[in-house]
Every structure is written in C-alpha cells, then in structure tokens.
Length: 241
Figure 1: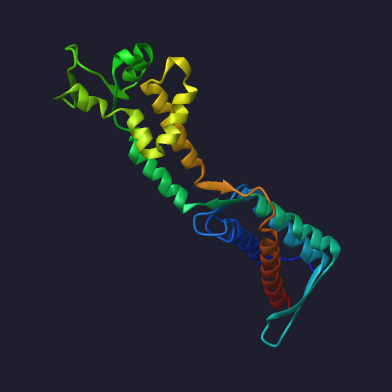
Figure 2: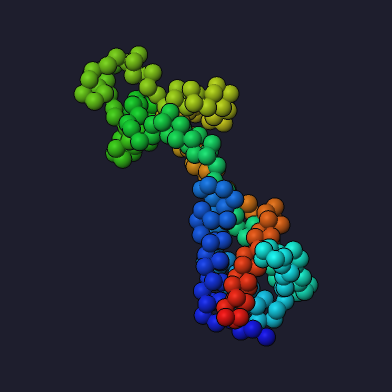
C-alpha cells in the first residue's frame, strides 16, 4: 500500500491549487471562481491521499502513457462525486453583460454626483440628503437655483431630477410602477434616488452568480479523475527510479 512521500504531497497540493485558484478550472470561464476555495482545496488533497493509500483508483495506459481505462471502487466513486458536487455548488459565474449593465446604470443615474432637488418637495428628508452632501439646493431667491455656482432657471433645474433620470434609464412602465406604489403621498426625489439605488444593487449582484446546483458535477468529476491520473503517474515514476 503506497504511502506517498513529499513529492507526492507537493504534487497533490499543486493539483488541488490549480483546480481551486481564481481563474483556474473553477468558475467555468474567465472571471469566475470557486466559493469556499480553501476548504475545497483541502478536501481534494484529502481525497487524493486517500485514493493513493488505498489504491482505490487504477489506470491502464497505452505505450504513450495515455489513459485507456479507469477502474475504481464504488466508495472511491462516491468520494469523488461528493467533491465534484461540492465544487459545482460553489461555482460562481462571472457575467460580463451584467458588469456592463452595472456600469451603464451608474453612469445614467450618476449617484456619485449631486442631484438637484427642491427643498419644498420633502423638506426634512431633502435636508438630510443635503447634509450628507448628496444634493445641492436652490438659493433663497424665489425660482433662482445655482448649480456649481452657475445661476439656472427653474425649468432647467427641473430637467435634472432623479425621476427623469430613472424613467430614461428604466423606461416609463418601470417609472409608472414606482409612482403607483407611492400612494396618495406621491413621490419625492428621495423616492427616486432609492429606486435608482435598488436597480444599481440588482445589477451589481448579477455580476457574480453562485450556481448552487450540480450542473457542473460531471465535468468536475472528470477533472478530478484526470488530475489524479497525473499525480499518481508521477508518483509511480518516482517509486521506480
């Protein structure tokens, strides 16, 4: 029964690292990764050591060293399958389109720049936003507003509201839905700011999605067996030297 020396242990660690590192075989594509990668790495190391000690998986090879047949016990198959399922459940997919959507909404809503509002729309809540540095307000002169020190008319001012930014970005139907839920009190600029932030959060959360299913288990199973074939072959070569 082989025990596996330092060379085998190093090879096992390298194989496990390559399968769990960000940008490796986990994540199923550029930008994806495995959640709980450190635990899964240790699980793979433990699996390979167990398979090697018990000789539970054997390989037949052709003259070129290519695997032509794999034999394994049912218990070995169950162990490999369990880790393959774990890897699939923890696969996190990167969605480039969602990333672009997130960037687009941030640009459209421009929540990192001042939103110009009227204090009379909702004085208390607006004042809180002004204090937080999110908004700029009109001057004491009636119908006079200053944006970055420039005097502008009320008409121009109203075209800079978050409601209009929201409707332009999300569509009139989505804006109408926000208004229908506001009740008799109507909407305020804070209502639309919160609605915009919700859409930005949804877009950000869609960039990385954890699978939480076994859809990649078969592929991971094959990868685990293939990588074990490599480390066991190298270990056998070292024993025969």
